[in-house]
Amino acid sequence: MEKFVVKGLEEGLQGTVKISGSKNAVLPILAACLLTKECCEIRNVPPLSDVIHMTELLRELGAQVEFSEEQERIRVRAETIESVESEYETARKMRASFLVAGALLGRCGHARLSLPGGCQIGSRPVDLHLKGFQALGAKSRQEYGFVELTAKTLKGNSIYLDFPSVGATENIMLAAVLAKGCTVIENAAEEPEICDLADFLREMGADITGDGTDAITIIGGKELHGAVHEVIPDRIEAGTFMAAAAITGGNILLENIREEHLKPVIAKLAECNVRTETVPEGLRVSRKGRLHPIQLKTMPFPGFPTDMQAPFMSLMAVAKGTSVITETVFENRFIHAGELQRMGADIKIDSRSAVIEGVETLTGTKVKATDLRAGAALILSALAAKGETEISDIYHIERGYYKIDEKLRALGAEIERKDVP
Image (cartoon, rainbow, N blue to C red; front, side, top):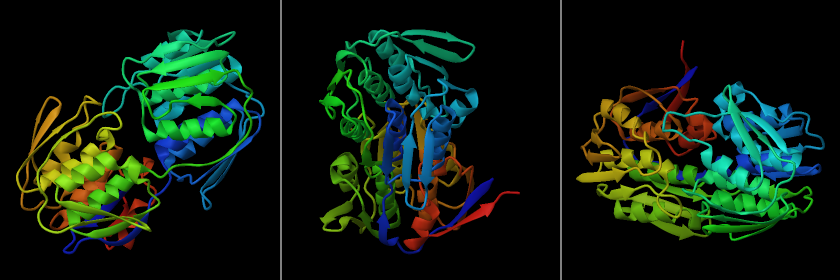
């Protein structure tokens, strides 16, 4: 077990940071490699724990996987599928393990996977995934904590999602590309990670249109081949470093970003009195003067991302005035509020809304990362706090941020990694 020890800054963060590839994009892309017997090469892959767990799962299923962490490149060759089953231990480590369901169903007509269950920020049921598979002709059975999927032949169909679930959209896409005929996913998720998966599938030979809108059309049944693909930058990591510049009153240049993926974050930062400037090298983020309070509501893309809600709560904790954050995506995503209160934040929770009265300063103390984005929020608060903050359970943070401590130190942060006895 390790912890981060962070000292509050007297001056803002300064310098340049390169944003890593997107974890949320690479996981479904790795699952898609099961759809072909040929070799696929994925580049700009961050060596995060979730990514490593996904490569372990692919190996368990029979794929040959070569991961060059130094070059941030993965090669996958699933010439044969030796198993269609994942165990509870795999699902426990990484919820995204269920993303192999669509690929296994399309390639083998059979999958038996441990149900991922809930998590700290709220339940993430797979009912929409199963609804989509059933519309394509699959049968599902749940017992003893597993879901078993079988299909002699998958056939295209029109599928309406009750909620624009990213995971369900991805899983249905993975199954539909090998199904016979036309599949239309209505009320589909529009996130950039969906478009990145669609780009990869097209590079493999799939016929997909409409990604990035709420209606995706897939003409399935074609045999897919290997492909080389570079993963998009991580918009949530980018947003977190933008928030780091904002909360410390710093000036940071972000390299390797896609500004079109960050529009809702940029808009809200502007309301907070934070300046963003597009330059040839990337995006520069800076602040002069006190942070302004805002009202914020999380929504599916292109709305404000739920994954940026916790970092923005840290900003609002030191803004001048009253802010209101409404969480509409996950029902239990304010757990970090209690840890921020330990640092002196004035936060009141009422169901899915948080009212934050900004304080002059936060103070360092011992806190715990309760989930991935909550951990990032605690680092931001620690950078702006007086004194020293110890953040435990940092394995949550390292699921989604590659070498975050090293990147912050390069910007002037005093952050150390220490063993917990």
